[in-house]
Amino acid sequence: MSKKKRRLSIKLTQEDFEKIHRKAEQANKNITDYVTTTCLGKEIVIITDLAEVLKELKAVGRNLNQIAVLAHSGRITAVNLSQVLDEMVEINENLKDILERRRWSV
Image 1 (cartoon, rainbow, N blue to C red):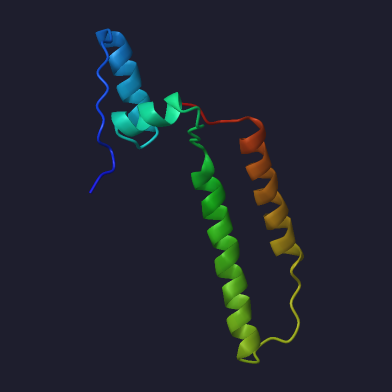
Image 2 (image 1 turned 45 degrees about the vertical axis):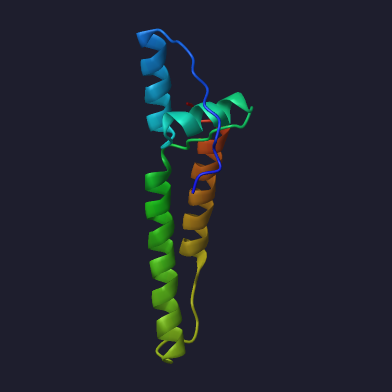
């Protein structure tokens, strides 16, 4: 059951309503939650361009898992992880780039 018991009614132009509605959708919030969050001064953060970075990170994780399985089964005894390190550095640089560009907005 919702704790919200008070109602706030405001008048908007159609254009303003559509802008607020669009921004609420971009933030994956309903209009009530979006307006409440923004009016209370809380920041809504939407980070774009993470799909490719997450794909790379999952690939590195799969590679490490395969190495762990081979090591536990005794099929390998030494591993050169320089390629994994290079991939992790690239992923980290991509994440920094995304954050530095502040590619989020509502």
